[in-house]
Image 1 (cartoon, helix red, strand yellow):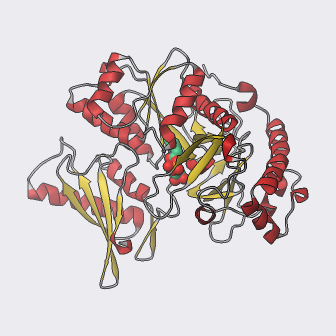
Image 2 (cartoon, rainbow, N blue to C red):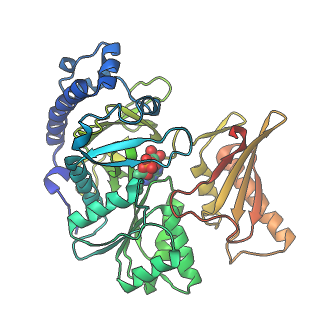
Length: 433
Ligand code: DLL
């Protein structure tokens, strides 16, 4: 039976959700105008004042915020309250340039924990459950975010953080953990380690996984579900908007409900900024309706996905976002063709491989090359050259079919590609180095 954490909101009729959003947006725009000079200047530049925003139908009048704005305003230029009223920061790992930093008041943390508690409940968790949190704790939002939700729900919460994989499995067994929260790539690694330890899905008590923070395919979901004997639920979020729990999957497991009482989602054409109708693929833009410390309006995520308002079997009424197929900045342009790493992953997993691969893009003599290194699974491992050649040729054909361009495929030995404890790094684009 479906259970909800805040049923009156999660299953509210459309009119009620709109009523909440219309009221909150007016207050939030005024809050940003009064307290965030950076955003006020952007509004003035566009000729918009808070009086022009009477409800979410007026959202399109507001200027966008982008990652470039966050960098310009770094570190505190977009903070909407005195720093003494903030109780926490989180930050992205920031491999290039300045980190992105998010700020939270006490109330912001409470609302965030509610969002994560909704996600855990949607995955079937109750206060009877033992939740092992294997997302990183620290500046990354994954650990603390799910931790707050799990405690709010009254679950016994194990703050494992990532790493030390065998110990993770020992804790799952010794404390009878029923829910695990980690990235999909770390879940796959845990599953692989379980197998090596001679453990099958029936040897561990886990029943659900709350997996997110990176793009992952349906094929990878099936793999993880089978190896660990769990139902794997997707969860989405970003540091700029608090962290995990902006959207989460329910028992239907086909798209994530966006917490619409806290965030308004729009899909736009990434090139023109034009708002696109539901069901159209484009860039996801979020407006945070009640976060006071970091009140981002019309924030461009660069995540590419689709929104759907079809009735959901779980009874929740909030709009659903499809699995993001990757970020617009993850998209590779190879010989003029758009390639998402998730498309390559789909071909590999459909051919019996696991998500242990690396994509290497280079440019020689003005021509782009696409090399995919894929691990053989222990079951298919061989040194028979004919067999390896045949397998490689099959993958080249599968990739050509999916992407429309030719890739070079190299099969490598099991366990030769480094495993990830957080977000996997799958692409090395040497053209940018
Ligand atoms: O990854 C927050 C998070 C933690 C989400 C734990 C879910 C679970 P950032 O490090 O700021 O925050 O990265 C945000 O990660 O814009 C997406 O590109 C990507 N992302 C997050 N969740 C998903 C998902 C956290 N379920 C960026 N599917 C986002 C695909 C995801 N991509």
